[in-house]
Image (cartoon, rainbow, N blue to C red; front, top):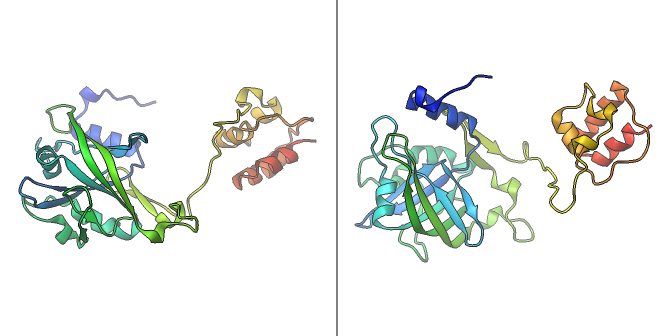
Length: 273
């Protein structure tokens, strides 16, 4: 296993490793205003949700690695502690990339990227019309993580109001994950897309308790066919099915095909003699 000590490699190398390894990352499109009310728009992939009650989002406009300068977004939220955070999906990903261009002070990235400003209800920054979801937020705290290039600044935001484009709702009025077609940031210039062709579900053992790897029959647990994912699915049942179990690898392959379709019960039936 290759090992790295952060202090022994360059900041650029460290950033490349971390951004590639810690992925995919959701993208926050942050709309802010400066002290004079001028709008600014910039995407950040150091972003996620951290609390439901209260509803808290955090994004981090880091100091630039190359020259240790700060971004307009950080300067704006320090001056006006409000932000609109828009989520990013595939139909607007190229416009979001354009908004990341480091334009000069006072340049409106809404105009440069062709995105549409809408008045927010509770905060000064503008809503982003094209984003699937907009969160109007008050900034609770800005926590600096350092003064060197690459140091983050955690902008801790409490959501005040949420706006959702109706074309991304299902028949019950809930957000439809497949319709959203979200994108996420990877390393270098890479992104990932999350649509119907690559979405999959994994049942969570929150209420029920899976039997675990240690309770799997040896013929299955030590099979040369089953992967860790396969065994994880088989070990997620509450009760081990009774019977003797096949050690035949051809039978294991048949069960594996069923697992690929998330047919766990059918896979177990195949494995029992």
